[in-house]
Image 1 (cartoon, one colour):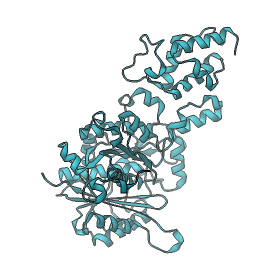
Image 2: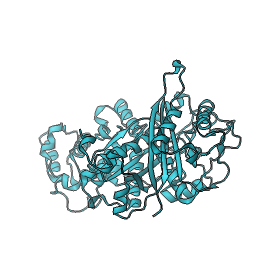
Image 3: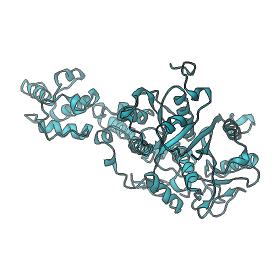
Image 4: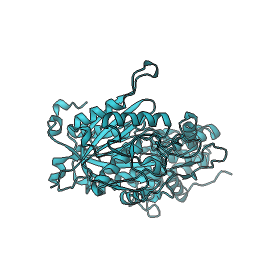
Length: 88
Length: 413
């Protein structure tokens, strides 16, 4: 069963498990609009998140989608737009 | 490319000495410098049943595994992104910098270098991702596979973590690389680095790496690592190693750091092809390193041997030591019977161990060896007190690397 919605909680879980957490960063805090880079995640980390998002939601995440997801909230919005548009 | 000719530091002109000012150890008999050293002197042996994977069906099931390594001592982002060998390197690097009293953030970043050696790279990480590739498909391969398993990963992660952006690199020369990086560290100082973090760690206790080593036919099928012993039947691998901080004596003095000792001489040679009839290159490495250090064989107070654990290789090393130092002419020891053979990690660990031996005036014993098959002055059974001014560390690496490093005690203040 593919989920009908992708949440920030889902994303944080992915971030934690596939790239770890930088010292001094609290992913349980208000991080939705903080750029990934400021949370300590480089472009490689964001690519890792994309692969896991695709695996979990079925939304195709080609490498250039990185442009649509500068922050966690932007990433969640992008994935939900794709789900609603039936892109999977 | 930086050229030594454009650099003017004293070291390039041969007028300055490289000293070691901070050290660490991560081994099966102790994580942390003093814990390792205390256990080594106590005769501890870290060869034990492998627990990191199911060894059922493997012909050899013991090795120098580090029990319960606390990966919480490594930043969580890096635990996920790097191999176990890099975890060891990150902890060892941090401990060595702390021991040296160096805070990289306070120094010019382009004058701080990292040079590590690696014999096996990130093969545990690599095996996991390759299994994902072939079992589940390309989309299941993690992105960090692109950086985690290649030899330079530990150097790169240390460089990033500590903001050390000077000339940095990795040397791959099996065991011998762990000594060759010390020479590389000196070159780095000659090119203008103030501080060089150097050494080597390894973590080759995973099915892919262990199976490769078993297939290589050099491991002890009896599951015993007894170098120079009548019962010598090969070696056993281990994991871990050591990192240390190298800087010029002038730089150490200017910041009032107390050196453990001086890097006095190094040489690396390569064995001729087996069918040439020419002798192996170990003796030439020893003699060249002693000559560079300006040290006579009679000045050498202790040798940390390569101690391969195969009868023929042990005999060849014993012959070189007898030719250079005379019959039973120098005390000989090894750490490897206690830790397992750590590829480049052992050579780096032996540098650290030799400097601790000088500091405390005691030679650690070779554990488990009871019946020497060679006529060497092996330090057996218990630590041997000795005033140590000069130590020689040897490392040979498959398929023909030889390196020798001469360390001297720091001049008293």
